[in-house]
Structure formats: structure tokens, C-alpha cells
Image (tube, rainbow, N blue to C red; front, side, top):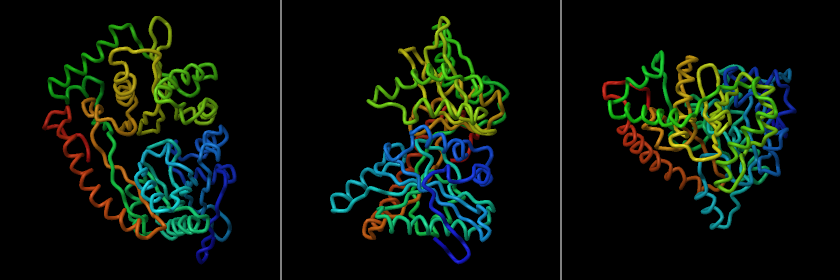
Length: 388
């Protein structure tokens, strides 16, 4: 595909793109968009035609064939593992006699973390960004895909997505922000008295149960330890009738290729592992991802998934903790509503127009919801906890 002097190429594997060139487009602090992460997803078979994720990554090259920009892109035969829900759209499409699948999705598989989606060597290169989005729409038209979806883009990407004709969808997650806390008690001091007492009571229950915690980085996690951790986190998925989206081979590989970006917090009782939480990290952000336990332990979920993560952020100077999607129970643990975004283009014009109207109404609902849950924040009313 060419646009004047811009060449856009469709790549059927991230392995077709040189790792150093790809990573030069990516913020070195962002683990999920790095070549190593995306390659591990493919090589492990977690992302494959068999799992309904077919790589269609778009790369933009200059006249010397040097990589100028890129868009992570997959052809999808379902909507699982996306965390931006379009099941109702799919049903309406199919009831009208159209095929909603396949569709094209720009997202990090199974990873609802906001980040750049238009990867540009030069941040001001709007020509390359526009060429990538035009190529994605053209690819959808040529291959019979119903739509193009860009999930969890940075707010900085939104003007270019709008200019390309995509409708913008607003949602929210709950994030924690570090306000210069030196220790966990400084963080608790920002809570109202009742909320502070409840948090301390939760943490005390875990301690009184004889549970302690170990922090393990990528280099500390050999294949045997990953088998243990994977077995624990699989319990959470099996309760829902499935297995983790990423398989054991994926975790073993990224532990070797991205050891600095992996953190496992292991809960132990009487010298035996009873629970594990898997996190990714950058210099400034901690991302909570997976958790599981071999039994029920009072308040352990909150401790392993939230309080231990907050404590780690304070100890290491991280500014933000993103624990994943959904979960209003995060509010009382100090996480605040934070907007997230997605962008959507559909081939069928009548559906495209209808969804645009729906998203306008949905945005008003999301904004009212964010205001309502923010009012239940545990922070003292004079505390300023971040932008919503």
C-alpha cells in the first residue's frame, strides 16, 4: 500500500520486523509494545490463528525502506481478550444479516493497558500516522473485515483517530497515584479515619494467618518457579471455566527476554506458596495482571493484588499503579477512576452512524458513573489524588 512517498506494509508476524527497528518506535519504558513481548505471544502460540488472533501488523517505511511508524494489528474471529466490549454490536450486526467477524483490532493481546497505538519514529509525523490508519481501513475493506478497532490508545492519539473517521469511545479504569509517599503509612494517612482502620484490619488478618510475601523479578524465576506460579494463577481462570490467555511458555520466555519488566509477588505460609500475583512494570508504572490462590484466605486477594503493589510502588518510586479493568472494590483501596479510550470504524454506514449516537450517550453515562464512584473515595476531602 502506498500513499505518495509513504509505503505501508502488512506483516503476518512481528518476527518479520527487525526487533531493534521496532523497539526504536516504542517508549523504552513500555513493556507491552516491545518486540520481545509481542514475539513471545506469537512464539508461545498464545496469539495465533488457532486462538483467533492473526497478526496483521502495519509498518510504514520511508523511501529508503527505513521503519518510520507502525500499528500493532490483529485480525480477530471473536471478541475475547479485548476488555472493550462490543458483543451487543456483534449481535446487532448478525441479526441484520451481516458478518461482524472477522474484524481488525489494534491492541496488545489480553492486556488492557493504555498506551501509544500509533508508534511513530518522529512524534510529529502525522502523515505516517494517517497513512497507517487509512491502510487499516483499506485492509478491512479488501479482506472482508467488518470493522477496525483501536483499543486503549493514549489520549494523545485521539485527534488523529478522529481525523481518520473513527468514533471515540470513553470508559474508565481505577488507577493509584503516588503523591510522594515515603512509606505505606504515609499513604494511609491520606485516608479518612474509618477507611484507614479498615485497611489496617485487612492487612492484619493476612499477617495473623501467618502469610508472608516475597518479591521475585524475572531473573529470579526459573522454569520450575514459573510452573508453580502458573499453577496458582490458573486457579482463578479455571473457576471461570478457562485457562490463562497466556500460556506457561509465554511467561517462561518473557522472563528471559524482559526480566526487568516482570514482578511476581509470592505469598507463603509455613514455607509453602499459597498465592501469587503477576505484575509487569516500567520505570514509572506498575501493571497488575494475574492472581491466584490455592485456597481461601481472608483478605489475601486485596493484600496480594493491591496493598503489596502499592507498597512496591512506594518503595521503588513508581508514580502510577494500574491494576487492570473493572472492580469498584478498588475504590476503597485508594484507586481512583481514570478515563480510558477506544476508537471504532465500521463498514456498514447505518451501523456506524447508530454506534456514533450510542457512544455519545454512553459517554455521558460513563462521566456520571466516574463522578459517583469518585465520591466514594477513601481519601480525606482535602486530599488531591489525581486527574479524573
